[in-house]
Image (tube, rainbow, N blue to C red; front, side):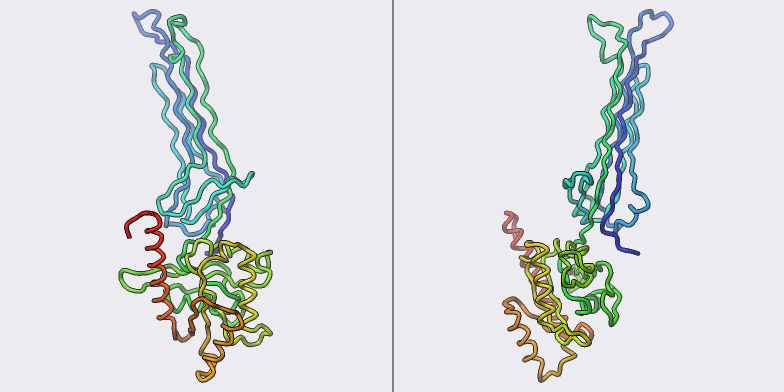
Length: 348
């Protein structure tokens, strides 16, 4: 299925039902008085996060969502039925904006979370409501108010614990295939990944985390070059970034150092928040360098980048070093979670 991470929809809440002007008409009861009932409230439109959908592709074909109108009031003081609400399913990680103004309406990050996006109209009043000591037979009633109509822009940012960052063909898809059951396309040409892929890395029966692979970032991505601009935002929800670098690129003038430097610059230009996230250097494809030259080769890259954070050496193709990396990640995420719970005043 094609991954769609942006969509525009129209939501229309139901109008309130009209009140009615009616008078009691029964045998042997003259001057029965007003008995017009109120209308029903219009239905509202809600967005609800569900794990049954994982893209916004359905909104390309079903872009208008309407709630039901409230029923009009009736005689004998009968109130009209409330209009049914409209619940629109969206994937977790969906951010909702007002399309015309750009105002952020809300963020749906948890399964089951709901967001009111269009409120139904208020019911009209029947003539019974207008009865008083000086107006015993009111003729007036009121109409229901119209429901809200809005055009919304939906943006989906995948929710993952760890994000993979790197140039095309750095080996990100190979890494996610090696450590999870996800099966993204892998080939020996750039941009084999055209949409984000999520994989669950299971350490044991009780511990796991989600890792996200996005299309490779190239120079100028922050200004819209390649696919980077479209998908860099998916890394904003992650707790850790893995900067994957091909330590022995071939058939290209790019070196490992220059490729890594370009990625760092693009991330800094894209977002200060993204640049400030914890980032580990993952030196991939160590199987392409002889063992007796590996230490010196990796250290030269680290020195050239002035890298001071954690560094891991792996081969995504053979699986060498990936277990140690995954155990380090789960340990980091658990410590991060404990720190967040402690800072929020929750028991650790």
